[in-house]
Length: 259
Image (cartoon, rainbow, N blue to C red; front, side, top):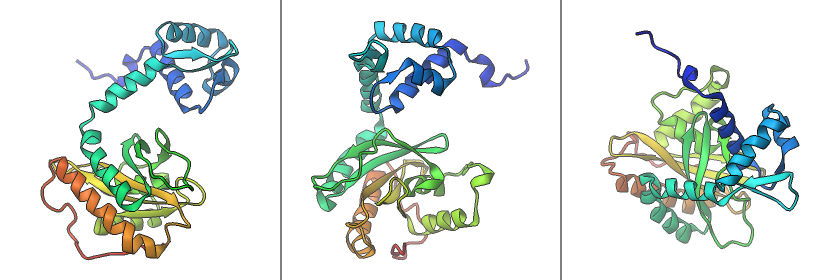
């Protein structure tokens, strides 16, 4: 029997419904049918029928204006149930909380989704000046330290050829050798991100821990003397909780950030 591409099994109406939910999830506030129609290339009539179905099941709620919509509590409940069943999050969360108490900077659990780094869970700090929360946000793998920490230990490393530059390869090589990646402005202007990979029991990269804060608090001296040792230890601890035994990194010589 000949094989068939997975796209041939897609049901267009279901695909459109999922695209609509994803579009609503990307919005920080309410969104109108006109905005969604322009964004998704779908007619208002089609969107209205989908919205009516979602609204009847609690996945979408209307704003004060009957033409504005936002995600409903049912979508939130489904998301929370999924997160509660994620072994990675369950194992990493206590380590993240401890790292925040130690360094007083925001820490994220980041996983790969297609060619993006998805900032999945946040452990917040009590600083007065903070970077805008990133939980739920996605960034291209090649644009930030978290993405590069994911790419560096991904056996497939299947990024588009147009993004495979000598500079990127050097950065990934550095991360593989030293076990961390650092960027400035990668997740927002004036921000600094430090990321370390996480490994499961099979020694496979399964995510990363990223620390994000304002660059004025995260200068090279602070990174090298305080933050980097702490986040690398946290990464090793989280990996151990996931069942990883032994060092994944072959070169254990100390390294410092030089950005």
